[in-house]
Length: 465
Image (cartoon, rainbow, N blue to C red; front, top):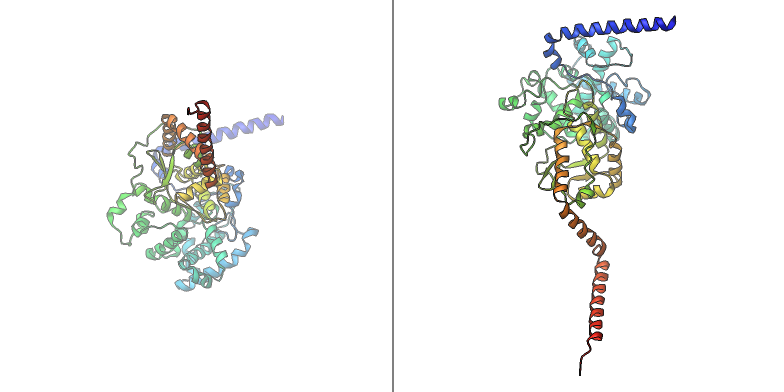
């Protein structure tokens, strides 16, 4: 009887949910535009990414921002800093915390709707407003004082090492607050907000012009900023609305130059039947490509975020690898994997592509020799280990990287005989010319063969007196 009741309940639930979905579909024609313009919510890292042994790159080390890690043990120390920085910001801005609280509270529904909470946790209205105010003021004060690291330690009352961790924690997907909170706290002072955002990008070595930064925000946000109308119209269709949060702002900034640069320099159509399989873009390591006669060189347009394959050369943009590289790339990739973020997986595809190229320390050495990779870690092995960990990522196929892979394969197939000859030459060079002593040994052996041949010749054909 219990089993039959359970089946009846399941059938009832099925009918209720299907009816609700059918009603939403019927009303869908009237809300298509609203759905199209809907922004992604602040949410957790997709579970399958945390299960790849990459969880440490998604958890805050010192301080929590937003709802998901608020009050956790690892971030308790950071709470005292947030109260201190909030008080400093309010004093510098001559703002009342009560007035600011009321202003954020008046936008509560938008703040609450900005978070996607799927774990059953509920937050009271006062908690959400208080967290947004405290975190927003803290972030803006840190950004305000971070344009000069020598003064930042004194201004923020923390060590440089702690300040670095704070900036890293600002980039975590689960550690975000709505971008609108930052606008509200800035009291609609667009120039002030732009200064904070410029400092944010500079800290992470992303350099943009004033006009490019205008393209990253909505027309209402850049109202009052002095910017050429031609620049505004250039990318209006792709940049509708403000960023969702600071990580989204960084994502836009890292790709803005690629969009303004006109896309694929080869002029090829990007339309191609896409595979529904997840990919790793396996094309071989740098050493394997070199053995196949394919060279690597620095991309002439270093602002480009995408590689090119032209005339047997793989052109890669310059990349600095330091202690924050994996954290930045993986959180940007996690953001692209979020279900409500429509995008072309440009960052995550780039990470997968690089992890395919870098297998051993020798691959890192080749990239350093070509001035493509700047290694600020302790060794080349540490860099190769880092990309081997990120090799766990899988991405949907994108036409840009699929074409690069196909071009490389076609180049290898069409030049197979020449590649074999290059391989033999390379083996001979490595065997006999790898050091001065091997060259001397080769010459000595050659001379011995010549003398032996001469001696044998005269033994067979002696001179007649």
